[in-house]
Image (cartoon, rainbow over all chains, first blue to last red; front, side, top):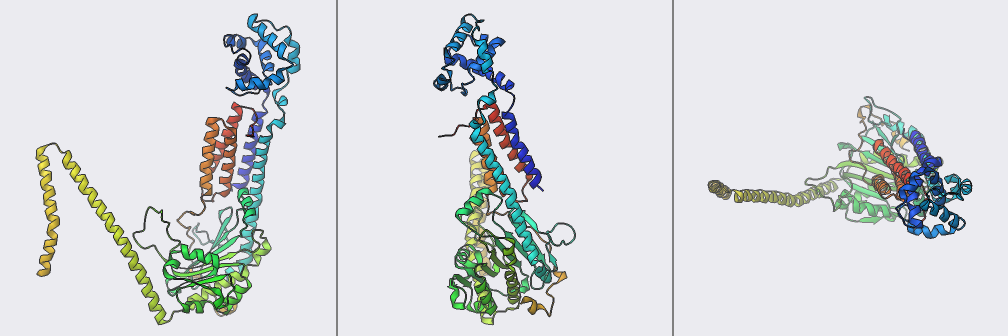
Length: 476
Length: 105
């Protein structure tokens, strides 16, 4: 909606300064006359006495104008320009001085200059040729290049995203009742590819057994931004497809598991709340028959054995470059909060049962529609894992162990935040007391002061008393 | 494969359809459009006040980059206003001083 009109608007607006620059020289002449008139004085004799006289006499305006035509100086740089202008003024020097002298002395002396007027009556913009504006032309060229890349990148991204949807529509529609809902409108929509930005598209599917819904995010490269395109030439990266499946309460047992690219798994282990809390260490994938570049994070060996079945091994070995990672968790709460966060959580972050898949689009950035079509086995893997997870149930001992771990984590969190909460309460109490004392000190009336002191004393007594009372009750 | 496994039962459940809810948390992992917007404003102001042409041109570039990287949920008025500001900075710089830009070298 913003693409074509904005681009046209932008081009039109960019042309405006060009028009402004190529204005008829009349405006410039008048503008320059007044300005150059002052500098005429400054250059020649640095006299300002005759400033007004020269300006008001129209017949001499042209003289001034042509004389300083070659000046090309800005405000306040007259001194510098004197040196520069001397070369250009060589031919005109004597005449100019003559004319100027006569102007100053006689104020009507322009006997020699009129012929020169005709020669130098050249429009300003032709004297300073276009070549002098090469930087501006470069800038505008850069902007045009950026605009063209924007349109091209946008189109390519849209093509890739639509191709993904087309390629997988049948599979999705066989599995979900609603494919492509955007949440707007009273009725459930279908087939909508949501555009989060020019390089991120998403599809929401729901209406399936074993899950609440599935969000497919197609995170493409920023082909519409020339800066990103250039930085990608140094550091190639790939388009990503992230599939997040939200599970219902009964759809999954309690375990945390992740498998994928070694580097990615290392990063997840550090960043993700649940993986760092529940999984002590990572294991190499070769032990379970996976390609060597893969690692596994698992809460218990039983889970690993159940998840890494023959089918998974086959798919991961065949499509190792397409598969980035798989993260299954019943305690998923997103990445860890950074240390610089001003608001530490006073209660546990909400967790939900989620399965996250991440796939790379083959082609390392130079993806085409064909590459997108070749990703179908990955989506089939998604459904396979989904069904497997919903069917899988932990053994009794694994389940008790898992429940114990979760309870421990929750307790430790509460303990940590309890200390924080106590500190906060203590701080608040201190503040209140300090405020009271300040108010008391500020009271000038001795009576009122006395009353406040009494009130404080009574409050202190009351604070001490409850402890005594409690003891009494206990003993009673 | 999954089709074979599920051929006995259709996995679709029309009664389990859940409407899409856009995530409440704004995508924090890409601050580029916001930074570029701010930078564009600063350059425009510099270009206008100090009459520096290169500042004004840089502002136009920043506005364009911010527009290209922006999310769909963002306000187009904000984008348009930053564009207008940067272009006005360029135009004002040239109106006040029609000389071509001098390279620093």
